[in-house]
Structure formats: structure tokens, C-alpha cells
Image (cartoon, rainbow, N blue to C red; front, side, top):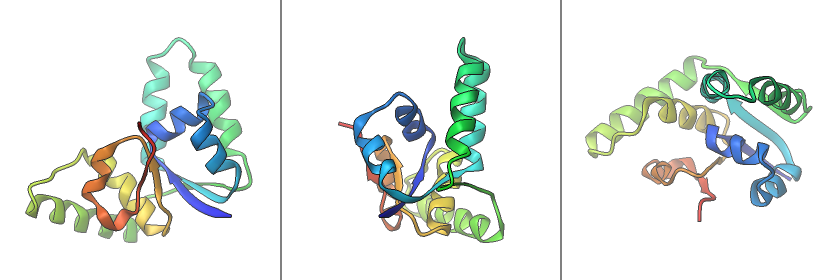
Length: 132
């Protein structure tokens, strides 16, 4: 059994039934999703034609006993600050929301499931990048 955090794109692929992520999450003992990723999902739903369907699917996912919504707490904010400073020092900026999502993943000591290769810029994250 494993622990994972999801970024926004990983959740989207899961919702579409992508087999690699479905297999990982089916065997997970804990799945975290940052409140930042939820905000991105809600923003996407607002502009889409399937808003109610997407909301219902997300609510079902969030109600699973192994799923936890990860708030932004002080430790997450500290990790965010450290990540931003490190990325700036190395000249490797990332989108702010992605840094928040990475900080939440680090805070909860769980690898981040993602399709975004730029998460490789945060080696301590242990991101599992599933894109082909």
C-alpha cells in the first residue's frame, strides 16, 4: 500500500479513467489533494459544459475514506517559501500554484502524481511523472 498526492492534471486523468493512475490509486492507503489543486479544478469546471457532472465526480472522489484534502498550514507555507527561494536561486521558476501543490506533497511526505515534467525541478519531491 502506498501514499500519494495528486496534482490537478493527475486528478483529471484519473477522472477520465487513465489506467496507470487508476491502478496506483486503487492500491493507495492514502491520497492527498491540495486545496490549491481543488481551486484549479473548480476554476476549470466553471468554464466547462460538464460542470455538474464534474462536481459530482469530484465530490464522490473526495468522499472516499482514503482521500484527504490538504489545507495550507504554516508548515506548508514554510516549505513553499523554501521551494520558491531554491528555484529562484537556480533560475528554475515554476508556476506558483504548482509550488504550493509541491509544498503540500512534501508536507505530507507523499510523492506527487503528475503529468507535468517541470516538477523534476524539485528533486526532493519524488514526483512520479506519468506522461509519455
